[in-house]
Length: 85
Image: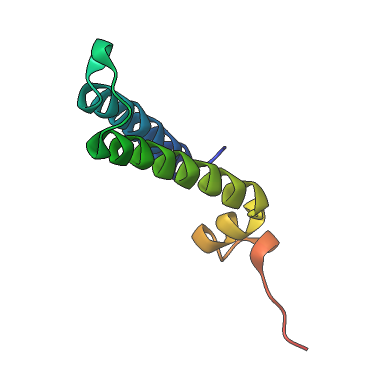
């Protein structure tokens, strides 16, 4: 991930996952882990959803054309000129 915004988004998702894992561990009883409670299930579902969002984000980034992002920011460069017939 070369782009600053992309890297920041990836880091934010990673931090959010860590935070949600800590919250889920607390909600589920820490060392007295009890995965049966509804609150515990919901907490781990949140971790799973954010993890999936991060995976989806990475897949999207991998499919993006880097030239497209460059041209959005620098349309006046020779590489980004569009000629009409």
